[in-house]
Length: 450
Ligand SMILES: [Mn+2]
Image (cartoon, rainbow, N blue to C red; front, side):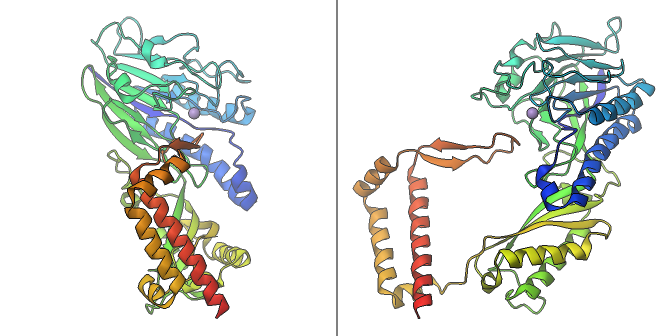
């Protein structure tokens, strides 16, 4: 016996979108609409697919003090499910813990909200002839340090067991219901519907997935947003399919000045070249299709006629090239404004969030520098000696101690830096970077002196 349901999470309704407001009021408005439109479409998927039920894994609201607009919108969406006799099971997360605020408008009675005191169990569609068991526990406060998963213990495995959990999936974490994939795998749960991480993700080693945020809110959330359709039997592996819904897709496009070129194959030299080049990339984006936009997702994607209404782009210029000399803060602003005028009304539109310049001026190649500049040649020799000398390496490592490194995991919040041991590979990397920077500096200075 199996059930088919829709898994969604992390609506963050009522999110203030501050970062975007600064860039453009009209874009902020567009995104605000997109956040609502994305959820409306998620509900439409549930209706079109006639799923048995819907599960929501936390962070429905962005803030503990629930926005009344968001509350009303959510009530309306859940009522669409109610009209189709589709029940909905909800846990609250760290952004909308139960203890903090109550809805001003009550949710319709097809919605079951799991309490925060214990793991609760609900049988679908009813206790007399159950077809699935849904277990869940909401956060009672912003930080949930307990390993909630531990108490998800179904009494039997005769029907599919589904667990709703809002978790950072970090066994060593202290805030977001700590647990790891192996913890989840050892429970008799056929599918863990997870929330908190905003990128759609399958969990390695456990029958668990994150549905992701239906509509990304900023440049950190570039994945296409949507929801998951899940089909699961008692004791079987879940079938998981992603359905894209986000009206707007964020993109960060990195342009390497070392390889980027104009139509006639010359390197980008001035603002006009840069504008022409970025316009071409805009056309590429507008020609993208569902396959190319979703090909980084780790799960099968449903065939739909989805296309975003538009893209919001950050253009990051990197590498070395002549164009660098033409770029300063004013130039990147002007470039961004010119790009905005180009394609903000096309369909799909491409809105330029910003142009960022991390590029560097071109450099003659290292060999030439070493030959022509005595100081640089000595620096390279010295760095090679350091690299090869075990005693010096040990001394460097002892002096430096642990180093800070930014975390690169996809968790959307609390992305902080953490301290890690300076191993041999990182030490080599540090030496390389120090030498490269010193050579850059020396070469630039001797250029200026000449
Ligand atoms: Mn969260």
